[in-house]
Image 1 (tube, helix red, strand yellow):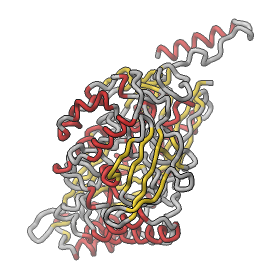
Image 2 (cartoon, one colour; image 1 turned 180 degrees about the vertical axis):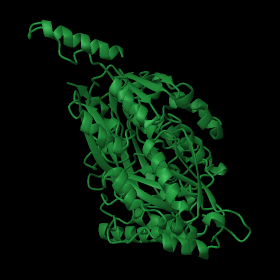
Image 3 (tube, one colour; image 1 turned 90 degrees about the vertical axis):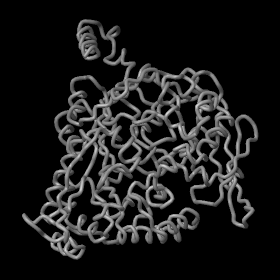
Image 4 (cartoon, one colour; image 1 turned 180 degrees about the horizontal axis):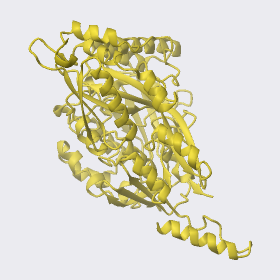
Length: 556
């Protein structure tokens, strides 16, 4: 409100001052308040994979590599992208007779943590040791298992040795460097590290950040405040203060934008598509509304050890009972295409000719009958023992469209006699505990955001099932275990020939349809609501968010 009053005062003064002395409308615009629908469950860059955390951390640090807005792999913290052609990557024979690859990176020479400590290979070595420990609880554990050796050349240069040659051999976006001078003391007991990390216990510690901004204030569940990092080696950021404000109800988020409490709604975690369409009609004079299709897969995870859901026929019936095309048309104006599998049509490895599951409630009913779930009183399904087919469906509370879709799904499933019960939680609880630790009892609806041609090892490989023994590392929350899928994932990763790799990707999509470990819903388009004075925001449409280039954002 103070910012709104100030703007009105400046405009009033501009009316009486001469053109030569009149201040511009944004002369004093040195703060940017960003609205998003989630608050991070943790700020640790390697533990848990919540998008809200990624948005904040992208402004306060940099990965070694990332995909840019043109979907091209590029260096961020490194000086040069290693390739076999430039000699920074070289094939090598492994002791077991197989072939691996050694990839050499050099850290940006002027990269320093916010407390002035240089970012060095000491940090790289420590981060690698944390990632490789089986009790550290890192999300990308497989990356560290493959990087079996690390050689330090000097304070800025190191070589990672991988136990296989993959087509993404030089993409190490999952290798997020940690400040050894701060975090090492808290890693003394690895199993307790995720509870003791300074990223959560002391998030305003300047030594945790080396990006264009650093965190200076944290109000859990409410907002996170950033200010420019004086040790940042890149282009100087334009805003003196950036606030990430969490408003978990999308209607309230829109109201906060219109009232002036926030300036910009980030597309990665912002308004729903229907809200964006309505907003554009009313406020196109003040805001640019960008609908960015991307690699965002809205789906429903199922507990595959659930007594009913472990039966493929029940899973098939649940999907065939849904009229997903109608949902896409009525709620999203057809802008969010129905998903056949997890592979997006925007990705070059998508098999466009594969036929998915059509809306067929009659066949769904037959499948439920075959699975032993017969229609009982009121048409609701029950087994021979009289137990009702009741399944819980969870999603993120406050997301208006998800909650609407949830109710539509519930009604459509009721038509075939399945009793689906709705239960929602705030995103930081839903992602931080319930999904991550597989505490949901039946189904969980949310979205995955991926990089271009991203192999779904973390979500489909049996080695990625979170368990107490691995401190809940991995993202295979369904508990899907298929030897055939494991082999396909592993083959795709090491196939360098694009044609052969695409054929393997097709097999993966066929198996996905055959096993149906997840219920595909649709591919999302993100809605970026950008005030016309805010320039430089470039949506990417993939896992690496727009805030990774926040130093280019400016007020004009």
